Length: 392
Image 1: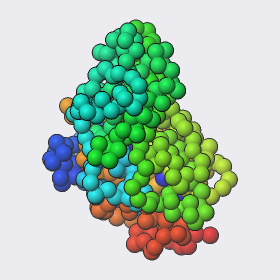
Image 2 (image 1 turned 60 degrees about the vertical axis):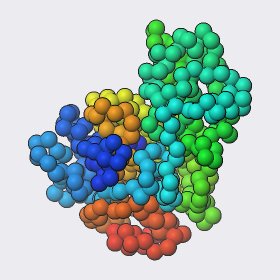
Image 3 (image 1 turned 90 degrees about the vertical axis):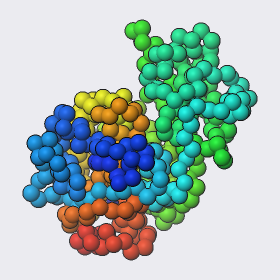
Image 4 (image 1 turned 30 degrees about the vertical axis):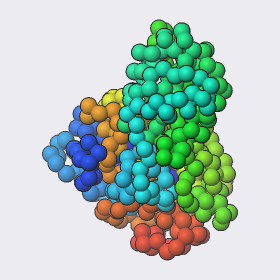
């Protein structure tokens, strides 16, 4: 048996009740994209996306249309962790709900910068909260002139280091980020240190697809650890390997964009074997959510939607497809930050009963379901409700 767990990065479906505490009141990634573009997602809609509680509320002409008979079990999930970042979201999907969020910086204090420079052997430009695409345009020439990498953060728990690879080769940028990861632990810890290589093309600075994330080691056990101990193979697609520091992962497929990730998923679906395929599709967040590009986000959703029938066609009768997200990132708001939103949950397969599961508290419902599906977890209520028969 195989489970394909696909995370559409930042695909939120409406503000959580506590969104105002995060400055995200009224955020609705999917709802606002639909209102502005009318984007149609027929494959996801057929599974029940538009039937999820809260999605079709409001003015009917400006909201996605439900289908009469969804083909999957469907729900919206509320995050337990007091966070809205990628690392916390993925940890919780894997069964590890953080009690305390990772630290967020507006800029890094002098003592932190001093230790970063001592550890890495370089001096930095920037040190501010900024859009990654904007800051390299603004500081790119100074970086090329001085050789100093660009240090910045965002309203997420990250430390990002950008460099032109003609000035600082990729291997050296990675080495610098590894040093920064060693510094940013303990009370200083951020969820991720991210290498952001770029080049100059046509008079503009453009980020390459050689980004690399350095996450903290998960502070507890996840479903990936459990699956590995029970001999269940885990294949990671996209940045999953980086987020979990490789723990419990037997095979990893690096991807530079969603097209590569979707191609990998289609190839894996046609391949023999068993186990969990855990994929992150990052373009919706990285290229469009953070850049407030509503039309680009809509087009990225459509590309994912067009690929789903090919994945579904390759599923075996006992296989399961799960589609979800890790947080929101509403491109229609002035903010370029993640947003505190519900995320969708769609569970499809030959043995899955298409039921409305309403609102679920905790992304970790996904981990419990997956572990139950592979027979290496405790009894799970959702698994018992929606699986028609035991797997063959």
